Image (cartoon, rainbow, N blue to C red; front, side):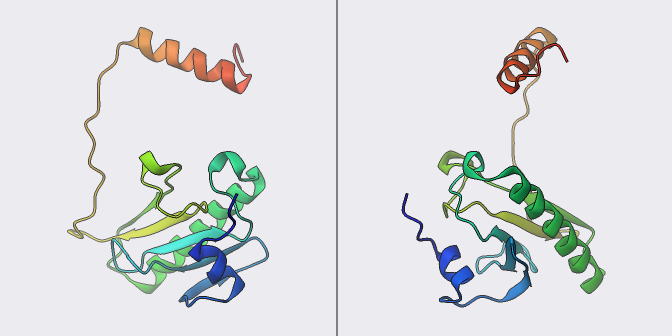
Length: 143
């Protein structure tokens, strides 16, 4: 695996960033292509291309940092009425930089950002079958 990403360069201090937060596990900095004003990325210091490669405790820490960033965003701008967390895992999911990262996106009324989807209405039997498959893969079937 090629460990190079722009995030690795930012973490190493070799690329510019507008740093928001830093600790031994993660860094948070302003997104240079924000979807809303205040859009922050939370990135683990360790390289992981996908969620499957990310240590669970590091993933949990990203969300803890994300919560802190979300609270700070709300504290700095009274117009922020909500916050979206977004994490794309894989190219088809929209991942562009292959170093796991959590987007913390502040939301204001009329900001123009939104999730566009076409929800379906599967039968309960299909949902039950999918739940069983996932539960078996998790090793939690029947629990």
